[in-house]
Length: 436
Image (spheres, rainbow, N blue to C red):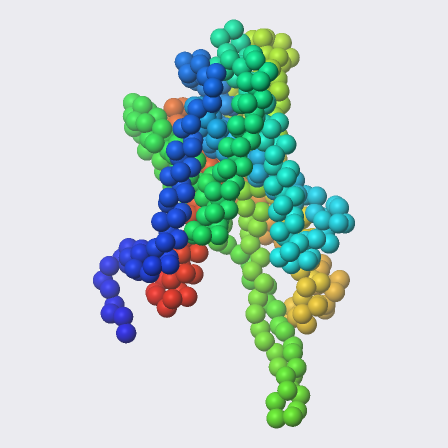
């Protein structure tokens, strides 16, 4: 019988975790791979003009926002500049193609073997996407009279693009090692590591903003409230009661037994994917127009309209459109995932039913209605998180801190998921958990 400890539950849980050899090994492997990731993020590519690159990122807010997700690797033009985002893009494309292509749809229903094949297709798709992204990034950095990267030699261009592809695939491999041998979802933790690595710069920016102490305090309060809301809406779900009727043999006779459980329908079942969709669409016109921007004309207007840091009133267009896209993509992605899950069909095949609702079409209509209602809450929440940086800067007049709402959502989500997995590992070994 273990004695009751007077230490805080979270501290005691960490002590318990490190006291178990296999769990301690998983934690150390995860930390070790993150260290390797940070070392790789500082391996530069050839042809770099460090001063010109620094000036480019200071003058281009779009590049600065993208650099946040690479943990500063893009600003250093390292082999890890693109992070694992080509793989994320490939995964999203495969999710959208599964319900459209019958072959992929049948593979998704073949259990673990089918999922492994779809994952293999995702890896193959990542390579050309990484190549296109790497070449596009290289073209942007070579623009101007004083290019940040000098890669006029075609062979050097090919070398840089291949190195960027290799860097992305290496990070994907590291993420899969974390998933298999460490704690948590490896790809998510790699993204988490890149975002968190950029937070010291945010602290430095906050120190610069100390001339506006009241505004800085309100800004921090808004950020903390947003974090609390992210936790609440990430964990919030609607429980739909379900009953199962089954037959068992006992003493040579058949008896009917019923069991009651529930389907947990998450309020924010789409996670961060709608914000990735919305941000991609909002950034794309500005990035394309920046190729033709001469300081005036139509291209310059597009750059201004699709720049998150443009002053009001033009800057309001970006955030209003971003808000609308976040709501629309939340419903779009939730509908796709709901159709793939086929909850009414699964319930009917397993002999389950919702009390008071007939199986089949009535159950499908009922579940669709519930999902549509709770998705409104999730969509408005994601839209609020999307425009939170704009609201915080407008209310507090603190312009120095460039905080990403998507980054906050990813960080909080990864922390919650990793804590749950650590909690599950402890509970399996009959240790007291730390999540109430």
